Image (tube, rainbow, N blue to C red; front, side):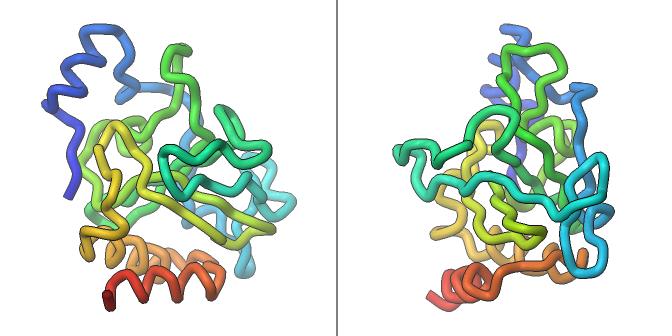
Length: 171
């Protein structure tokens, strides 16, 4: 489990006015976006969602089209709920950051997610709020949470990504 509440990072951000636990920015339950085997683009829910690809490493450059407002972040609650939102610049009022997704609650996994034509095609473990960096490769519980949450919420996942996640557990 990963926590942000009462960590030195939260304390520092609260003192600097940069904690976004109570942000009113738009957050979506991934389960409510899934219709007929596709994740639909919020808020219209008329077309399958497509987001930019995500970085594999923190040192990688942002993929084309990625950045604030276009890159989506995710977190998985202890109840295996998945929330997503476009990532925001922390310095903006009502910015959405990882701690916003479940209003400061502990999470089982968090990072960035890429979706192509309504199917999850990639994700990483990049969350500074929850300090999840490296979780995909070093914490089997992180990967289990992702796989179980996807299954429990009927999230469409690219078979290549699903195989990659299964292989991380097996290794």
